[in-house]
Length: 248
Image 1 (cartoon, rainbow, N blue to C red):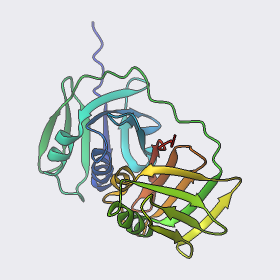
Image 2 (cartoon, one colour):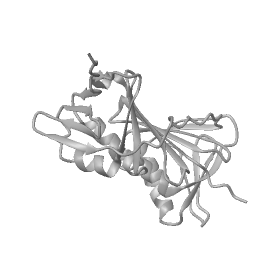
Image 3 (cartoon, rainbow, N blue to C red):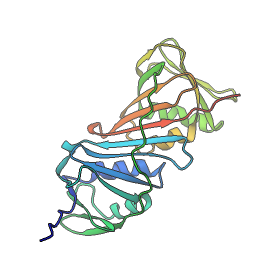
Image 4 (cartoon, one colour):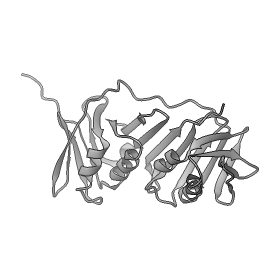
């Protein structure tokens, strides 16, 4: 008699952390593969231009149940589709997610939606960059976003440098600024100075609460790493790496 495998599924007490994570990812990714295991949910993907990478992780204790027969269950989805269907579900409702053959089924006490899966072209998760950074800081998301928006009015890029006890920001068109009192902590072990695309930085922070703490790591001509939690919840973490613009 053939043994019937149990369908992979997982349950969350409310859908808000998952919905917010999907909203953030959709700003930079068109599609991606969620990897669900007893260690929680993970997605780590490059954008189409392959100049930035974004990672989202939901720890297992955020789930009420995780039922994954195999070591890792992979579910590949279009973020436009996922966002559209999740918009039909109240953020405070408990959700059950079930991996069907061709769809991801999301159900609540009131409704069920079937989200079409797409082909998974990735053989393995993109590796995390191994980088020794010269500068690190913590700053409120709102303060950093406000400063970046000024630079977007002037040009496409911003130069981020470490000063003595503060972070210096420069454009190539005469605008400069500092984040000093607004920086919660700043550590340097060398000369951290790189140029980044402003719109990518803003897209990675779109929709994040302005009072969240943003963790920054960067260096001389190195990718910048930005990390934060969703709703100050340590169980829901997002990290973003953006390649620098290298001047000739």
